[in-house]
Amino acid sequence: MSTNPITSEFWESLCRRTVSSPPTSGGTVIRPPRLPYVMPCVVAIAGLIIEGLRPILIVAVVSAPLLAADHYTRRPLMLLAASVILVMLWMKARYHVGSESIHPGVYGHFTTSAVGRRVEQSLRRALERHHPTPYLFNAHLRTVILHVLMYGSPPPQGLQRRWFPVEEQHIALDVLLPKGSPKGVVLLLHGLNGDTNEPYVIDMYKACQARGFIGCGMLGRGLGSGSPFNGGPQDTFSPGRISDVLAVVSMLHSCTSLPVSLGGWSLGGVIAANLVARCGSSLKGVLSGCVVISGGLRLWEMFDSECAAELCGAYGVYCGEWYPLLGMSQSLRIGITHVTAVAVAMSADDEGKCRDIAVPTLIVHAVDDPVMHVALAGPKYDDDGRDASSQCLFAVITPSGGHLGFPQGWTPWTTGFGWISNTALDFADAVMSSDHD
Image (tube, rainbow, N blue to C red; front, side, top):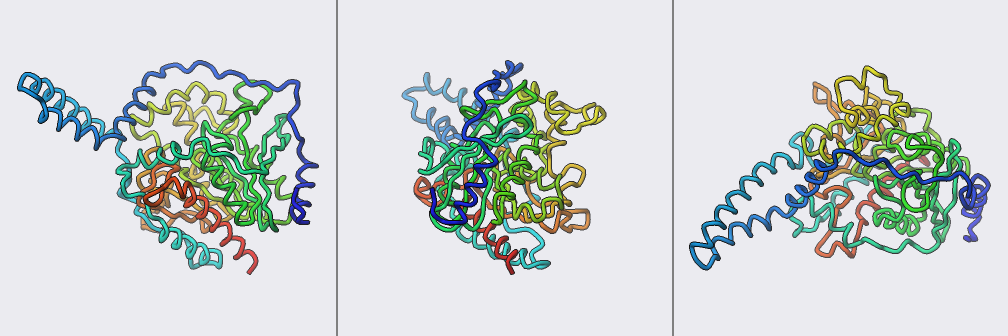
């Protein structure tokens, strides 16, 4: 345990509000229902793999007929090559990545406040040190490379798990204390199908410890390993539930006078954005800032392509359980799919909620994100070309990086997810510095 008095005070306060293990009775891990119609999802994933290898496949199908030993072999190879090229031309439209409406750069109301000016400097420095790996030739490879190379990274030493009671459930919190005097607390929300052992979360833990932040990873109820919950599917993790995160943010704020920041990756970022949008000014003085990494403000726009609908359609079986959480009316459900209806209701920019954001919030996104395209995550402009978002909403958009990737340099395995972690913590520093002016 740290001998620093501020750290010790925080830890003792946290321990009074949490328990060392979840209740042994009543906790269940219910198997999810069998997913119907999974074949379109499987086909879509296979298509993504093929699309990621497009340059290699093109070279292979063109070279094979040329290298054939005789015309008897060459003819069927030419027919095969022609068929593959036609299929890939069709797939190109289905798996198109990118947006012509949002360009790389920094966005936000930088001149209206001290925090804006500090944030602008921080974001411009982030773009200057963004040096993408040159030999990763498409967004799909930029997405998966670090997840493959960094898979199985050991968690940092000193990580301690506590359990926080919320709504008759127990939420797992993995806490890492810095060695010196802490300057803030960062609550971390992992992405879908992940947990606090994800390599990007581990990278952030290490960055927090090195830079004097208390890192606190929240494990969604029912997710990961050893996260029990009580009840049925409606009681487990839902991307529409913000009450768990709000309760943890409020609890951390009550534990210390240090600033509390929030950071989320992918679907965790969607939840973080939804929290600051729906809670609005009630978070002022409670939450110092929020960072949304490869998340989205207008999640329903994910389903404007057939491929996206196929990939996410398998989750439609759960959506009926989430209607009460989202306060969705029957009229909203009529005429649109389950998945799209839920995506609308859980989006930060639904019905203009994004304008209500009252704490500094940063969007970190890549133009080539193949999972959540930048148009649903970036700044929103009105008919006159003016930024129609909150004065507290900022964005740094990189020309490349994929989804939760952002590999850097010729040897990305040496830097890992460091660009993301440092950009997020630089933003937290900028916000805290402005608060103390």
